[in-house]
Image (cartoon, rainbow, N blue to C red; front, side, top):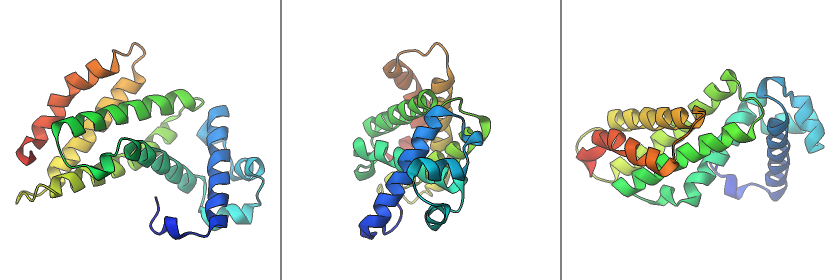
Length: 189
């Protein structure tokens, strides 16, 4: 959630929800590059000024949409309330693989620009979560490098999995990937 979003006026929340729903429906119909702010406002049945009161442009909306969806995926698994363990890391890798796979299957023709914007948003949230987990261990070692390496590894593995035409069973893939990510974080266990 955005800072102070819980305290937002219900009308603001409702309008954001309308915009988000319209945007998600449009992403299922056509690729991101061909979606305009006008398309979103027509589908959400709001005017352009209302849209711009909430989002700077469609890129800010994409960032918000991916962020909200990914945070919901993390919260659904209560990973945001956990600490670093091998099992929590396994669940996180699984969640990212599932999220990217679903994103690719639900969006009409994901394009390179869409994917790179989504990648940045997801990596930012992953880094924040992993840093939080590692800082809870009270280690005297800096958490920035291990959190960065793990973030890139998890995202890279999930991207590989989600783009694979002949995907192996997800559980098997995660079990094979886990030691490759965990080796970097074992000093914090």
